[in-house]
Image (cartoon, rainbow, N blue to C red; front, top):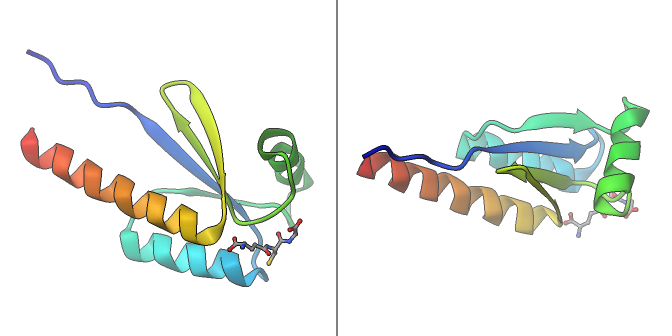
Length: 97
Ligand SMILES: N[C@@H](CCC(=O)N[C@@H](CS)C(=O)NCC(=O)O)C(=O)O
């Protein structure tokens, strides 16, 4: 029997001077999870993507792509809690393999 796990990729829309982004980036390092960082202050294309996809220019915002579906998650605490849960579930999944 083969086991397939869903593939999920993450991008964090942020900018350096934002304290909520700094909190989120620091938690990401602690969780040790791979998240692409997209700085909206340095790259106007990322800012445009965020507004188009998420609906507003607020940072931090986590873009979650899973099995072809995209979700945009705002609020630093919600992002950190989501990534913590995801990391724990992934660790559980790997232990059962
Ligand atoms: N409660 C939010 C606050 C985020 C926030 O205020 N971000 C500021 C930058 S530090 C921002 O994006 N302001 C622009 C806006 O809200 O449109 C969180 O914890 O993520």
